Length: 452
Image (cartoon, rainbow, N blue to C red):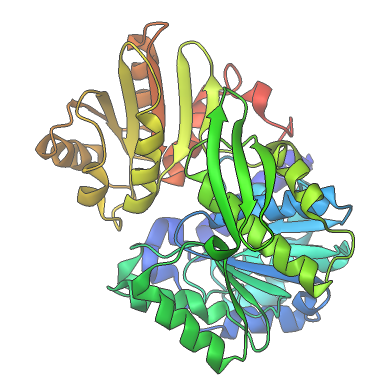
């Protein structure tokens, strides 16, 4: 059988036979680590066969994960990277040195486990993909793997690793039905990745969560490093390919010029967090080839080294089309700060969310002077476009509802003049389907792995 056909059948099997958070929300979550431990026992405990760095947080953990992967690749290490969700292809979740694992590997792994493990343990989709990542990283003998949590931390399936460093990017309101109704409760779930005597870097500090992290660190005899106490990051410029910063080390009083190919002013927080993580790793001597200079060089080519997409990504220059995932209110607030800086004759926004988000709060950050294309992705969790439009109207946002992302993108592009600008934002599902709908004409040329 052709491998592309076998791969599609395998991924379809995973989507349809395993509980999937994208479809079921909290009902797909297993509130313990039993299944992932069973899977990894069958696979000979692959999570213990490589060094790892564990990353949690409400926003920014994907960007920080890719930044650290790029930095360690630049320093000469073989780097595994596990993130979720994906935008256009399942294999985006599991990469080695920036390249997605092969279709053959996915097919063979599932076929091997299907009869004796999948059907008996009955893992969730996420549990199986975590086990798959651990297994391939062990088999390929990576020097280090960057492991991003899926949701929370304490009971996240990734939380069976013992990393050399834990990182928590920030805490905002998200998944309140699972993680808690206060920032302190959410922080306690994220702090579950703090391990005994393993240092932890905290990205953005908040008074409501500081005590939570301090108590977890004390209990685990772990040292807490606050990124904002180590580095200052000042944004000094931007063009269509890079943005530029001055990075100032607070203790050493050293100033470095920094360029990054990740656009969006909110990346300054992620850069600060990533640099602080590098500082801790250098001090611990976990990676002797790692230097600040290597980190600075890597920031300029994160997308090229890792394949990161969907973060203030320019899909087309004229008329300007930008995609940026903003899957919760805090994320949307940062996206809109950047969107305000875009100059255009008329601004258009394609937007869609899933049902379990604080949509009313997110919509309060959108500007009233744009034309809206409310849509819903093809997932059972999607908020119907008609409901989103109704909520938008109450916030003074005017536009039409579309039953698919592709229809919304097509309608926006039909109406745009050359000096207009379009932003595609909201859930990962919306951004991913928009990219699919635009391939190959606008997106494929920017995709680093043709043929996926």
